[in-house]
Structures are given as C-alpha cells and as structure tokens.
Image (cartoon, rainbow, N blue to C red; front, side, top):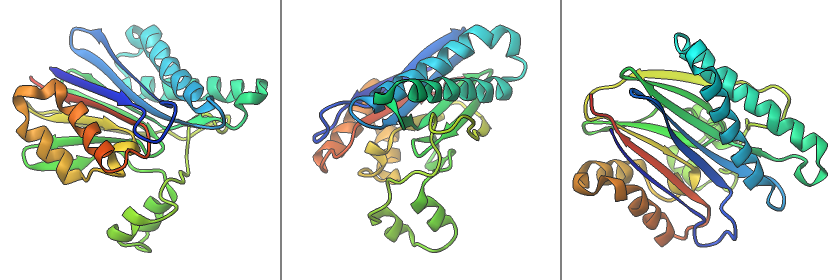
Amino acid sequence: MKIGVCSEKGKVRNLNEDYYTVYQISDDTHLFIVADGMGGHRAGNVASKMAVNGVLSYIKENFEEKKHDIPDLIIQGIMYSNRKVFEKSLKEEEYAGMGTTLTLGLVCGGILYGGHIGDSRIYLIRGDEIIQLSRDHSLVAELFRDGKLTQEEAETHPQKNIITRALGIEEEVKVDYFQEKLKDGDIIVLCTDGLTNLVKEWEIKEICTTEWENFANIPAKLAEMANQRGGYDNITVILVKYES
C-alpha cells in the first residue's frame, strides 16, 4: 500500500480548519479520515480535530471486539464522535454551533469500508474511471440529484457550500455507510471541498494515474492546482494506492 497526504490552508484563509488522520490498526487494516470544520473563531478547527480524534479513539479501543462487524464499528464511532462535539458546543459558548464534515475510509482484508457526513468526498479510481463513493450532503447536490440544476449550474451555484448534514450540530446524526471490494492498483482519494471546488474529477484522475513514480507527492500537486486557481479554502487530500 502506498500513501500520500497533503493538508494546507490555501491562499485566502488564515487558519487551516481541516483535519485528518492516517492510522495503521493492524498489518492489513488502515484507517483514513478527513474533516472540514466550520464555526466561529477557531471553532471549526476544534470541531474537525475533535471529530477525527473521537472516531480514531473509538475505533482503536473497540476494533478487536467489533472487527467482525466493521460497518457497525464505523457508524458507532462516528456517532460517538458526534455526541462529543455536540456536547462541547453546548457547554462552551465560544464553540456554540460548531460542526464539521467527516469522511472515513477503513481498508481491511481487501475491502474499503466507508462512513460519511457532509460534503468532503471519497473517490475510487479504477483503471480509467473515477467514481465518487460518498454522497454530498449539500443543498446544491440535492437540487442536482432532483434534476433542478444541471452539472454546470451546480458547479457555479452561489450556495454550493451550504451543507445539509454535519457532525456535531445535533445530538444524533445519520451516517452514510458504503463498502467496496478493492482490486490491485485501485486508488482511493479522500479530500475536502477546497480541492473539488477548484479541480475537476477528470483532472484528479489524470494526475493520479500518470504520476506513479511520485505517488507520495501527488496530493501536494493537487493542492497546488487548487491554489493556482484561487485557493479559496483549506485543502486536504489523502491518497491511497491499494496493492493486494
């Protein structure tokens, strides 16, 4: 397995409110998480870091007991983290209303298990195809799915950053879950919208499939593309090449 990571604040924001982790649980089990925080002064940074660390700690503590039911492990881990962030936002005024996206991939035994809230994304690149495995929880994505916007209209819509589901905003949250059997050479991409708002899917696929010898540097190259086009948001990219 090859892994590359990049996380930076971009060209406009003063603070990087994205957070991520890459963690090896066992010989054949790896966990990848990205989160894009939101809230008032520094609250987004707190939300994303709390969310990622909360899920990580839950999965580490419960993996041996729940490794035969990974879907439940992931869903319960995200729900546990949601409660922690929500409780902090209630108790401390400066964090009131904070929340975060969270997108997770756990690779175990040749299967990618995924959990997701918000509009950060997870893609699978297989051969000449790039597939978005996560489903955006955003106003514009819902309008597009309902046929009320074209793809072009969705990409330039002024409300494209309004999300309809986030971690930490309410006491309970619905978690999207998915899984995919991996093939040798598959590439997994986890990223925040600081990348996908400025770099198109076909461009992500093109770079990921032509820069083999510099795989670990591809996330930084993708982030640089976003920065060259304005870098309006924080940018986080985790890239994983699966080798069976």
